Length: 457
Image (cartoon, rainbow, N blue to C red; front, side, top):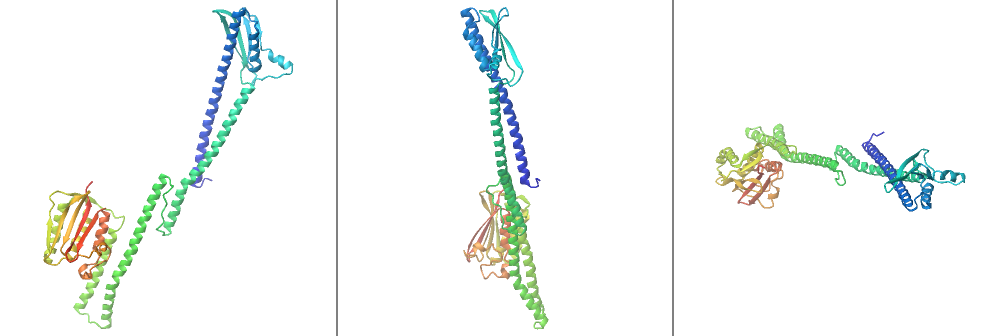
């Protein structure tokens, strides 16, 4: 019993509702009875005041207590309200008594409203006329309720009981609906988790109609599923790309080694050097693919620090000036006129800029120029611009340069163009920094790549 979350929620909701309803109904019942008894007391006092007023009026008019209107009023209350009176003069002599009416009616076989209890209560009132005491009036009435009043109380109690029963039924119905709605989200989550366990990475939890707390949990689950799906896609793509790129050098190495084994080729130093180059290209390919996989990992954490753009350019210049001089390409570093601060992971930043600058060096012939500069910050970003006077690209190639192993220009073979994933690493690291990349290029004119990093908040 109560093994499921829904049954527990339903049980405690219904229990809480019933306790609350019973407490409220008890207070309503108690409050009503108290108010009703107070009303009866006030009403009885009004009737007694009316009798006293009538007696005083009659005494002023007639000078004695034998008036028929007074006697009729006393008997009326005795027969209808079970309110009896005994009227005494100032000497204590009984003048009128309506308390004997009940016995008379019973002896005649007639009935009248009977008291619900056997106890009676009496109260004495002094009657004065012009400040002179003329007598006293004793009011006698039952301690409890008469039948009509008791019937009225029972009717109200029945209505309260009916309202309590109806409210409990409604509480159970709404508790059922609420517990179903609440646990339906958890059931969706459980189903989605099972699907995810079965390697269905496309499963997502619909957010519509979920309670806020469960919705937050569903959003976290969907984010997790999205992350796992992305990682699976990257692994699959990585495997396919790697197999594609390994096929050619492995086939070359295989044919060369088989030629050595079959005696077709003599293992001369030149031929061994060619085989070594193919082997080293495989090593570089694996290393670059590892870097790309790390850069595209959604769980990668960046150690961001505050950096100054001018200092970054100075460090980059010291690193690359010897390489540019060796090839005969002029490297120009344009310093910024103002200090530009931004946040980035230092190692990843240098990896990004080095990859782009290496590309510029590879495709810029000797005697030409490469310029790096800090671009004026716009919209909360600081930019680095790298412009070369190399071969440039066609417009249709620009959208694809960040794809793995993409080489738009056939002249960019593996000897001049490297592995072909340097810009893919740049794109992945820029995405991790929440940065932007802007590329402009003209064929045979050169290429400009601008890298935008968020400024320090």
